[in-house]
Image (cartoon, rainbow, N blue to C red):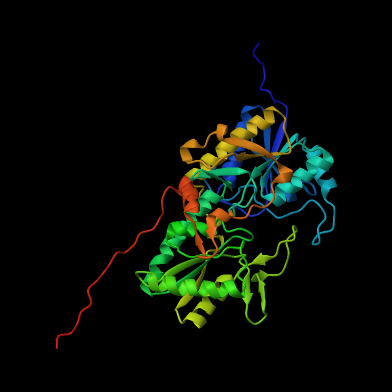
Amino acid sequence: MAREHKLFKGKTLAILSGGGDTPAINSSIESVRNRASMLGYKVYGIKKGWKGLLGDGDIVDLSHQPYDGWYGGTALNSSRTNPFPSKKNPENRVPQILKNLKRYKIDVLVTIGGDDTNGAAKRLYETEGIPVIGFPKTIDNDLRTGTIHKYNGKEIEAVICPGFPSAAKAIAEFAGRIKTTAESHNRVIVLEVMGRDAGWLTGTSIFGGAKLGLIPEYEITKERKRMFFERVKQAYMDSPRKSLVIPVSEGVRWYDDKKDKVDVVYASSELDEYGHPRFGGISGVIASEISQKLGLDARAQITGYYARSGICRKYDRRLTTTLADKVVDLLLREKYGQMPVLSKVVPYHELEEYNTSSIDMGTIGNKPLSEDYFDIDKFEFTDAYSDFLKKILKYPRFLDFNSDFPAVVPEK
């Protein structure tokens, strides 16, 4: 017997985005909105993350409205607001959240974010019974999603989160461009890339011609620092154009000679509501020491927010729609407290719902770069990591200027 109305007619689903922006959030919002609408939901957008559910609320109606999912960032805006008490804000704002969910008659909440935003959502689900579904978001690609990468007969635990593919392409292109100026001046350019706790994004520089790298997963102790400088000198001398691009994560733990300890470099010691300080400046420290200790012309270049910015790339676009298809499955089965994920690393044309699964939002956590992807003795990303990137980026995005000009010897 045919249904007269859509399954969830009369119900309201709301979407919020929290934490740092990525090029794929608008695509995620549009994809979830479209599928929820087909199921009969009225769809609201909550402005500025959890902040939009405080006070009188800041809610917009996304139903039957045009929405550009190719445009980067988030039209709903974002914040690092934590509804639960924290050191920075000891106030418990959960009652305000509950009040506004009731006032606006919101039946289901979809939270687009990382482990902070989705961790808070999971806690609301467990303590208050709020129906929530998480949606992954990060350019750092460091959420534990249980995604498997099969390489040479081995199964490696990897991650592919919306936002990372677009950022990966941006950083690969950035490294490929900066490579030409490094070559022109026979310089070492230390390229600082976002990555507080993981080197996933930093590693994408190899598709722009970078050779060596440093990531947060491995502390650069006094001994490793000495080994690193030796590798830099050798790699520089071996390079055809006497130049190097060395990507380093902003969260690299670096040995400080004066303080005799390993630490990160802080751009600001101020903490956000989830207890995170702001990193930045490690590239300048490393470039300065390369110049002083190796006598090479070294410069620092911070990529900053470049990786977060710009349009949603094709892989991300299809990834968000694929994960939104899984959200439909979760909504139909009323399986809340879950987050859709890719079950395995696949190329663009295999981004389909049958290659997805879902995980409990309480088990998300952080996933460092797998040991199979980085050789700490050589300070290099491995062939396994290159294979992982090929699924997303297809092939490296840089050119080499192949020259072997004969030297001119003056006549006697």
